[in-house]
Image 1: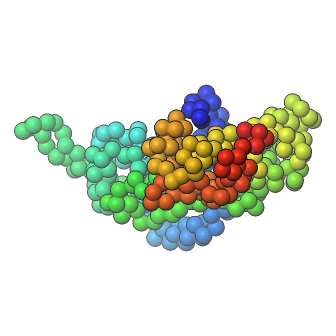
Image 2 (image 1 turned 90 degrees about the vertical axis):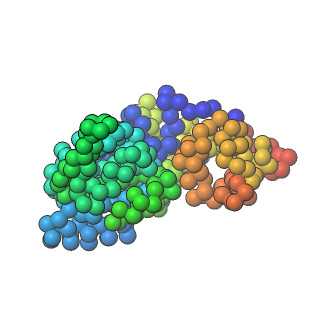
Image 3 (image 1 turned 90 degrees about the horizontal axis):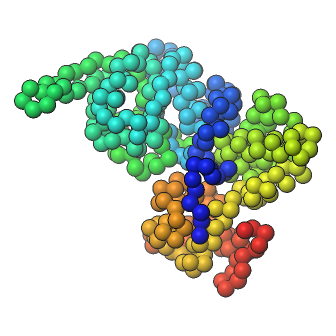
Length: 346
């Protein structure tokens, strides 16, 4: 059974930000589209839209970014603000609890400013409904008072841009999705792109690292920039204590093995998740409810954290009847029906 993750035992390969990521994310975050590595088609589109908006001296259209955590949605939002030369204010869906909270945010924006809403799919329904006219007509209708004495007040808003980010595009309501002029899927990166990101981060942080070690880190970083940067920091610590500070390929392998991250970037939790699917449910198909109960994980955690990367690798499939472990998953775990899992993996 998988041990339920806690804040104190956050997974190294998790794409969601952790407490010690904040400072480094700010240090390593690219400031322009030119500095941003990967997502080439999206960058090409944004370059055109930014140029057109600047030429018209208008704010860019509302933008919706979706994809697994750690791929750079927040970074792109900050880059758009920087490229437009405007201020960006950051909030999240759960933080905007009432219509008054949204009114406070919007009325404090200046013309062309950007409001970035992370986890936009978690906006309360009542807040989402008053956001519609704000996005369309730059006005905000708010009810003051209660009962017979209540009155509606219309606030005129500056022309602003909403950038929404979500890991669960299916949970964003159709009316809200329709109000975004541009929607982009941020996908997993290619290994070569992750290598460039590791090399850039090592240069900024002044970490001595050999080329083969960069490749080793990139191969186990789950094609996710945030994970790549986190692994770089962990391996740097290992190098400073166990060696002279230089990260070699051999040292990187030892450090990552110590962290129990295998050649595909799976950690102990991933492997135990797949093993539970194989041994408790004969490889599936099994419903998400049953799988969550058997692994002591929340359904959202399975869908947001485990499944995207396992499906990307072809180790897991979603079918109409439920989740299924693929032949590749059996092979990776060195597991056969009635067989045993390799002790090296667990």
